[in-house]
Image 1 (tube, rainbow, N blue to C red):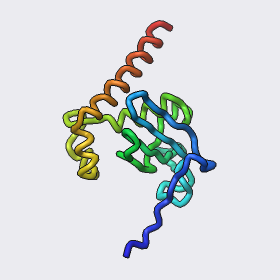
Image 2 (tube, rainbow, N blue to C red; image 1 turned 135 degrees about the vertical axis):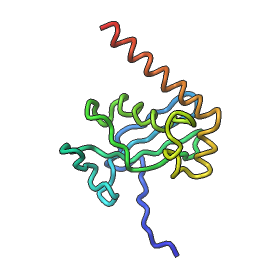
Image 3 (tube, rainbow, N blue to C red; image 1 turned 135 degrees about the horizontal axis):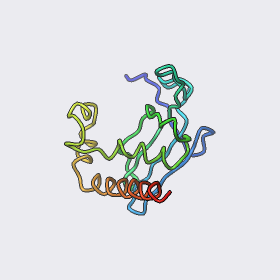
Image 4 (cartoon, rainbow, N blue to C red; image 1 turned 30 degrees about the horizontal axis):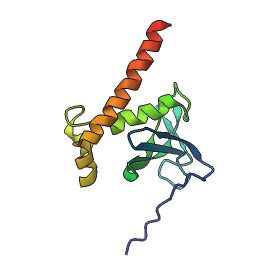
Length: 141
């Protein structure tokens, strides 16, 4: 019998931060990590600095692909910013050859199948397009 308690995050929760949706069927929801999660109350000291930790749920056409509470956005951006959202998407869109094989060691068979699918490549195109637009803005300034 599994006695582990799983925290269920809802869009109506007070810790809800934002949702990102693409017209291609991708959705990412972000919450503050809950106090009962391993990371504590959404903060953890890392390298002498307190870092924010967020819970996330990534869906592809309504199907949950990734969910976790271990994302810490760059301290350069607010936790509910588009930059923080795309920062997380950058990790979720990694494929074979982008990182060492050990990176995918904790992936489920369903996540591995998604990683190797054309859908992950579509997400990568969306993420890369965002990055190029940001670089273009920086170059113009």
